[in-house]
Length: 168
View 1 (tube, helix red, strand yellow):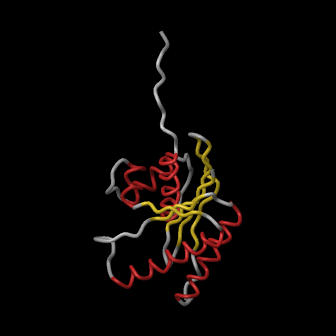
View 2 (tube, rainbow, N blue to C red; view 1 turned 60 degrees about the vertical axis):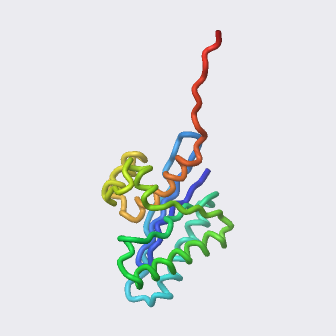
């Protein structure tokens, strides 16, 4: 199964593509879509859409995993929250156009899944993603977050391992 994790943002949007085969996970692709600076907000959203459309077209994921909307301490102000909501809308539109189902995962659930702690720092998530996926070199923060989303969903989709009883 091909999973596409997406960490939405209006300035940069991270993506991470993994292939899951049973308990084996392989990184297929990851990166950050960065619209050119100086573009209008609408043009940035279009660039994000076009970038994601290309990712969907290259990898044909079966499922897109998007960071769920957050509230509370991280939502610093209304304007930044609104811009993030617009970027999330573009992500959902791109997935719908590609005919790909979307699931949302809360940031705390991703942190707990990847690091074991729901309040882990971004740098801890980034480092654990590198370790778990055996990646070398620097992985951009937004791409690491997207890979963490996909990896978290892969854990949720794995069948439970059951103990086998010995025969008598």
